[in-house]
Image (cartoon, helix red, strand yellow):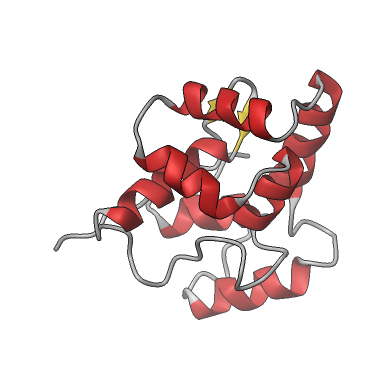
Length: 145
């Protein structure tokens, strides 16, 4: 089966970045179309974006997978999260977006980001300064500057 990359972390759902990518990964994995080296879920590492996002929304990842695979738009599934977990304020969403979009830039994840860049053959790319940038670069999109 042919694999497909998920959408960019930058895609917003009701103002929230990354959520659409997480749902995209869930759907692609269920169809056997997600490349095998992608992290999904919350068990591997609590610092991975799926784990952080589900904690931010206070929803169980496995329940989110079940809900996602039932169908519906990303917006409908996010509303489900708000009903079964928590509804962040606009300020909390702004803080989330800022944190996630800058993760790896001058923080405790910088060394891991550089190591991941090296493993991907992108170690010399100065335009890749965050994990979101790396995702875009690895998937053939130009990192946002």
